[in-house]
Length: 271
Image (cartoon, rainbow, N blue to C red; front, side, top):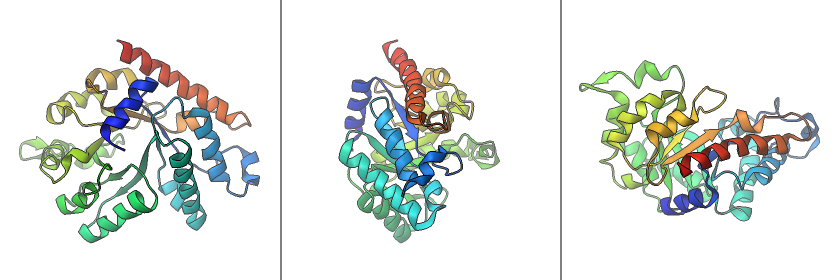
């Protein structure tokens, strides 16, 4: 999916909501455990109930890898279901990959060609030759970890390097890489005040912003400092939406939570 196609969907739906599909069998409604594939059954119900309210879905691959081959089958079923039934939806493999060139190429093939995701999250720590293999794929996006929402982000990401904070160096240097127009960046919602400086460096790139809701991030603050003429934001909510209920009405409850966020987004876009 191209950036322009994503922008078109945002304007059409008046939403820049991304829903994280982080499926934990200990948290999904108990009646689903009787299903042949409870993870996919859960995802399918959530997707069918919320697809009109969001523009993206983001499965975190760790929640699927934890269940071995059955987990990988569930993520494959999920992405195939999305691509077949809701092709306008932007898909993100939250895999946080990153390795030397040949390995990165194989990771990219796995998520872009085999599974058919539109984007994948990538760690920048190993530098240019670990990221450019992902950037080589046409109409695919690489979402680089820049400033994350966890407390440990301050261990390294804000350290002073070359009289600059490390995350700012990541932003600046990454702009020089081949096909850097295919870059998006992860910036945690709990770091909203940092968005002023971030937008000075990358004024137009899309940002994937986790941390709204359960992690305490504030939608209005993120938009105040980070929104662009083309919106330029994908606001992710996972637990706050998908685990709104553990009863048989779980999908309807998730849709209500998603609608609450989408309504706020619509108001922000009107303003």
